[in-house]
Image (cartoon, rainbow, N blue to C red; front, side, top):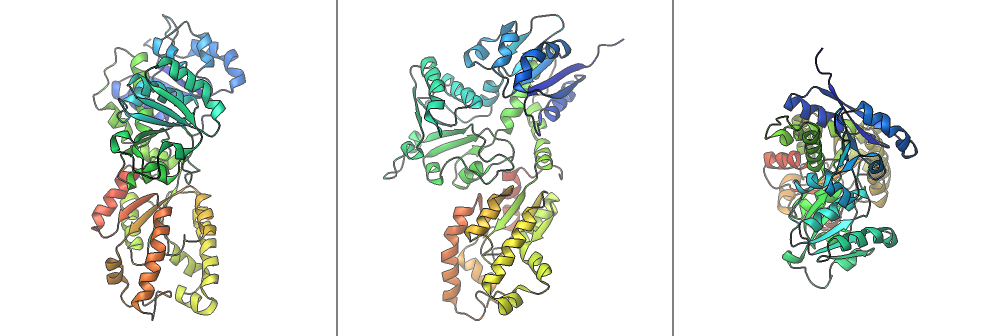
Length: 463
């Protein structure tokens, strides 16, 4: 008889749509390791009693919330780094040998993180992942670590732990984002914060959430969001639209998994591009498990319908044109609705249709009319569904070329240029405030498509 396949698993509760099985199976395939990987959703009150059976039955375990601290007591030895951090996320339980606990989260984060040495680091939250982020910042030589939280008293113990571990680093806690910058003067680039998000704000399906006000981003030099679902959160997209280097946590997730596999299989040969190879197939799985709508927004004539059609063709995601949806629902054209019932009635129908389209939980592209998202009621509908907003920002000169005399466009048909300019000037600031990602609509079509696909990780297989 040959050696039985290795058995690995993830302990946590709840586990939801975990990507760990796909990641580890792919890593094992790349290294020629015969093994399985299972999800073990065990409530906190059961973990102490059941952990011995898992340590006996499995060759290796990953550990996630809420078990990273409680499993320590059942292990025979703990790696010094895991001991210092106070959390174990990887357990090696060989048939012959000591049961040992490690922390691969920190090194996994550092392999994917922005530069932290000599930087001011602003950490959003004070939960388990924030502990890892703070230790990473301290170990890399950050000059200041500040925790931005909702409840200061909950963050104080962690802040004191970090301050004691890294006495040369200034550590403090605040509940007010405005204490992180001076509104009267710009922050010099070298003094801007490296922003690390350890909160769940922006995680699917609540993709409309963002953990900090937009004005804080003007005082940030880099952003790392530990959320990986969606691939690019609203925080990441808004930072990128300001020219700030920003990324989500998918690379950290794969890196810590690769480190765990190296602990479990020290003699295995993983290819040099193992991380990139695994990453290339994960974004499609994320969108398959957690579908969302990409909402194309912009002024009339900005090219939403055309970009939507081409984006649909490249990604395989179906396109919904909101104006066409409304016309089919009403049984007449939009100009006819305006003529018969007026703009107010049309906007009511538009909002109903927006809610209907967004309620279909699938990956899709939605091209909206120029005024579809302007009202607070429409924005409330938008943020109640998993969706991200792409603003096609066209210049007034380009708009004028495309709309011509305004035929078929009820808001400007038969009126002079001043009406078009007034609408454009009044709507553009609203578009920008709503946008998660801004695309220059004056640029060639292929550039716009490539930018959207790369930024949102849409290059994988159709979900």
